[in-house]
Length: 103
Image (cartoon, rainbow, N blue to C red; front, side, top):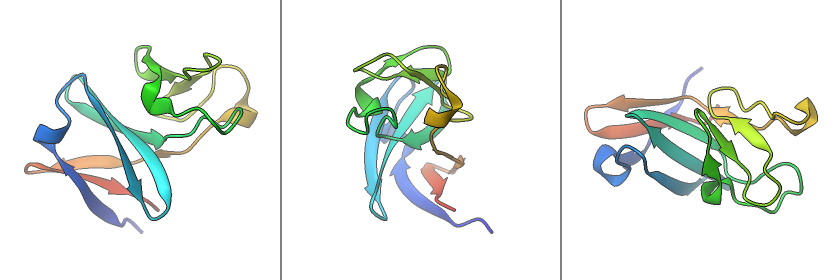
């Protein structure tokens, strides 16, 4: 079952930008790449300390700022080892609102 929640308005995260949110005890990074939004757990699962919000974008991926592990923003897959795959969240836009499904 989907449970979409409004997290931002589109003008808050223009194309090429990012924003971290905290919701239900989770820190999640939202990225806008060419007007497509992606949501991923903000903490790198490798050492559980680095915030992915500070990472470098690499196509449709984000590289951890500490050790360079790359996470696919669509799937959460890690390029180093599947043991480090992380959670991504469905996201959609309705009107001017950006919504996330936390289920």
